[in-house]
Image 1 (cartoon, one colour):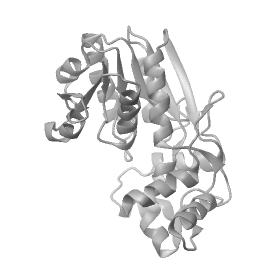
Image 2: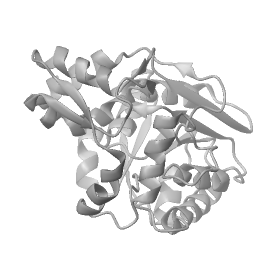
Image 3: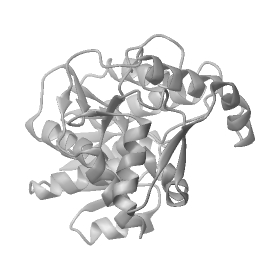
Length: 284
């Protein structure tokens, strides 16, 4: 039995599907019982537990061979990242009480980077989970190809505005489906101690490549346009951000290549073109 958090999202759902395809038993960990019914229909157990409830999480994780652990993204962390530190303590308490066979945490490329930026969320959580008395692995995927879903409405109008720049600058990206397969394989085969596994797609891609992939999927011209760096703070504040600096520095890190892999990443199979075609088909 494998407990999967975040199962109603893209990555957690991909992990659960990959485990089920291997014939593994899955326990869907959801905040709302109604959201677990679709997974129950697929043969999964369902456990209701919020990320803020260590006791409920411990019950959800108990008796499992492994736990896939992820947290909802916090794009606007307060100074010192207080929410992720509190979340880390809840996870540690739950796992220490449940004693699952192993824990796989969905981290990120650049989790090892000390430079202050948004991805320090993963850095702090990795540090907290490293002290657990069970085998722990950190899966560090590249920039999600499916982040381009934010750009789909604009792509339909012919122009996507990008924070990734210069527009021809290529970075590591990976599909959420490839993340799901990699996570399921790692959980199923197991490991000893603490392990780091990094993952990217079959190639690296730029904002211009995203525009080209949308053009192919939509059957119409699409071009990319850079959002000037000096406009970022005002734009993020207009969107409701109180602390835009960490997100801005994360984007700087991708654009300047100091957010990168620590080692040699494994490669997934899904191309950007395939991922965005699927995204467009799902959107209808």
